[in-house]
Image 1: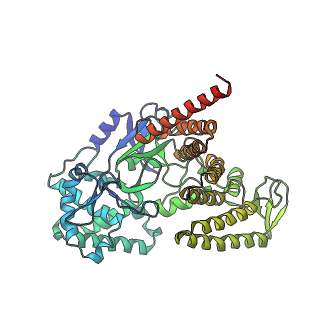
Image 2: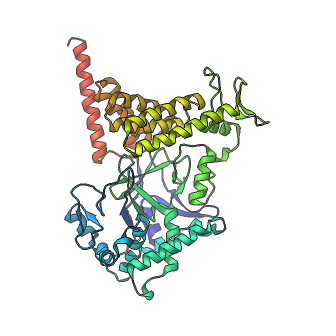
Image 3: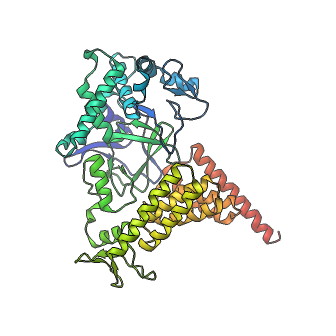
Length: 490
């Protein structure tokens, strides 16, 4: 750990241990918005398959183009000989194990199982000195990771602990190493560490690609009002300052989805990470401003459509009272609309999963209409419904209507996320591309400029994604300038 601290000192960072929080990363100088605070490659990583990204991916770089399956194990893919060579020391051992696994058992190879298999292999190769170790890349850092699950074991569902033990046994069955080379108890403990410390690797548009373990990045603690953001450039995890960070400040990122009330965020953190957040946003829990914000994001709107008040449950449980005009909204009325939304949501989900996109659009629009009657305009549920409609409309290439929904989501994004959050920048980017496609060049310039203002801080300016954004903005500005000159008769 001394070597690691020395390296971090060179980057103007220091690790301190605080009794109530454990290890924390602090700045030893000022950091400006957009400046890289820390970057690191994964200790181990694996590609993921999910609904958003169902295709196979390269084991090393997560590309889904020009893939070739490993001819020996038939499990792992690579997009090039370069990626295969980069991963060969790890995969040559993994491959021997995977070749022996029965076909039925291969179906149980979840990303978590594969990540643990690779973690065991990495540890073994370090012991055998086949893979070199560095201050930032060694198994001792994995041992130092804290498992909050084990710290708060009395609060953990016993089924979860049994599952970790079963998963550890599956890893043992896959590797088939002698007892002297494998520690099932340690593997089960490492699964609990993965639950709290593994990161989802995303592309520049925050679409999930894989899972990785970044032990140095894991030192950074959570805040619901973070001063930094974690993004990925291929495999590389990059933490950038989202705001001016003075010397001596703790670096913080967000572990969870920030769009939600304090109660919702606290619940998510407790269930997944086993701690209670005490950041600047969370210490206001239960105070009037927090109650108001929760009612706006997750509660109900006033029955009077002209009133912008928020509702609080009436003391006798008969309904909800508007805190602005005093109008009572009947509990039965709210329940009726809520049940309608639930019923239609189930049908919409079935239509969407069946590929009936036009049918699902009609259903989600009905949900939107009901939510507009029930919820505040800044409702998270309403925002999610509009996000779903936007996604389906984009898939159907209904650009004009997609743009209208994209624009409807932005005000809520700007309310629920920090001002420099990448999701805000990405939404403006989508809006700008749609506006330009539809010939709204001046609007496109405004949206793309706003996108760049955010994303140059969160993503930097050197990736191909950012270069494409800057190129689009330059073209849109040139087109807007030409159109203006044409109108002026120049």
